Length: 312
Image (cartoon, rainbow, N blue to C red):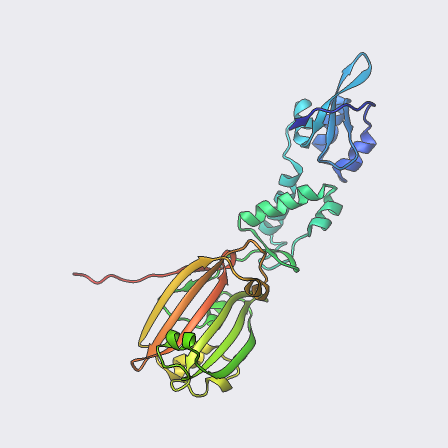
């Protein structure tokens, strides 16, 4: 992209080196020597002036926003700096120097190491994130992404077992586990009369220290009388309920939505990230015993279902 401008004076290679970054790609240095007609404007490597030599004087043609245009003018070819940064990260992953869950350079660190503008650093990280290679955590940084965890919609699995089966550490953060009399709205969820004794738990499940699920659950107290006394750091609600109230029937409903601020904070999400919400109702001994709302960051989770169709 070229923008018209009116500035004088010839460029110098030292200034070009400083603005392109250190070390400068050799092909760029060769192109500059060949051209001897490039001047760089203060403001970083996103803004360069391309000049034409005429009678020994330099006539400014415009502002160039991409160093590849400098190279193209000299008959050289090279990828833009943001592509070089992306390749640096990808090559580190391929070589095993970076592993899923590892933190990568921040924008400020990329600017310092590669000598690029913040806009270039942001573009490199943004495109790798969009491609699913990186995941950005609000207030924590940018990390190499894991393959998306897969939740099974038909088979009811313990989330702790799912996480450990992928070779990662699991932990939970219990925000509450209280006994209460069901208000009208909660009573409707469980199909009981208002005032019926129920338990209400709220737990954040973590995989490799990253929150992957917010579980809010209402449980019929008569079906699981010790639910309110359980230590859900040591055992998950799913594991406990499977023991005391064997499953007879399961109902799932999955929706995508934008989360509220409280949910975003608990799951460490950016403002524009959506969530997948699975509502799961389970029955045991002919009674509806649990209504769970399982919320997942959409970029960190996927849900699958598989079943066999009988002949005839």
